Amino acid sequence: MAGIPLNKNIGIIGGGITGVICAIFLAKEGNKVTIFERKELLGETSSRTTKLLHGGIRYLENLQLSEVKNGLNDRYWWLENFPDNTKKIEIMIPFRSFISLKFFKYLFGIKIYEFLSFTKKLGKGRIVINSNKFQSINQTKISNYLSFFDGAMDDKLLGSKLKEQLRDLNVTIHEYCEVKNFNNRGQINDLTFDQIILAAGPWTNILMKKNSIDSDKEIDFIKGSHLVINKKITNGFMFEGICKTRYIFALPYSDKTLLGTTEKRVNTPEDPYIENDEKDYLIKSYNSIFTNSIKSTDIDSSFSGVRPLIKSAKNIHKSSRDFYVQQDDKLISIFGGKWTTAPSIARKVVTIINNE
Image (cartoon, rainbow, N blue to C red):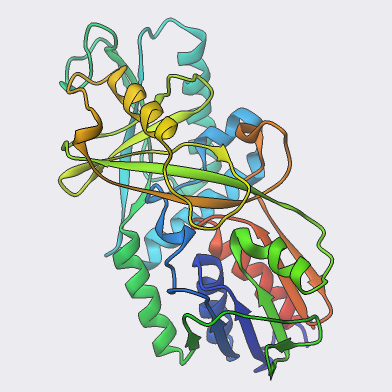
């Protein structure tokens, strides 16, 4: 009967954030769950993010309203369920002039962002005119700001909490266990399950093709790179990069600054790393508005991850951030998604399995 837990034996391929949240939701429904992860749980793309829990204010430019609304609902879920490992953060957007089309476009966007949050908004954004409050910003260029609120997380601490939940729910975890073969009849390697969930992020299409399984969607390998800078920052900022096609975040990161991200189409999700042109782009973009300029010797560390975006546009800046769930007999395959929207994906998967 629909909606009643069926205590199924479920195998999940992929131990990133999507697979982990699906496992937690399904185990809470009374199912027996096993995760297969080829490396460390939450150790690949899920550990290489901008550390934000967000609806995606930038997606409003492409009118991705449903994606933003879902993301905002899930943002609230994370902050409500993990208050010790998440927090709200005010992010400032600097402008040279408040009498500009761009200023009013973002003011309108922030109002829509807050409206789509309904009762779950984290705070009301501000308009700051002719202010020298932010001493790290080049005051000769910029003195006007808009602000909005989003969620932030410590993905290592939050990941530890999620792993603890998996243990408490008796989820079986196989790390450093590569799935050599699976099918839509419930088989993973030499084991048999009532249902299989393929939550392999950017490796989804690769695994499906390897096992001769047709897919409805195709993953676009879009790499995002970040720098950790040995400079302390007290406020979060979102500012236009020098390429003028996307915005960059500069966020407090312990006693350092997290700077990112880039968007670059690559041929494979394997072993991503930051390239010199990405480093130069982030450094030059930072130096275009901040007074405490940085150079390569100020880099503490860097990391890169490949987003599992659904291929939807030639221009990667316009690619959809939505997710898609494909069902083929006993196999459920997940395309797209991000850390923030993992709960929405898990709810969709639970509904499909409970309605079987």
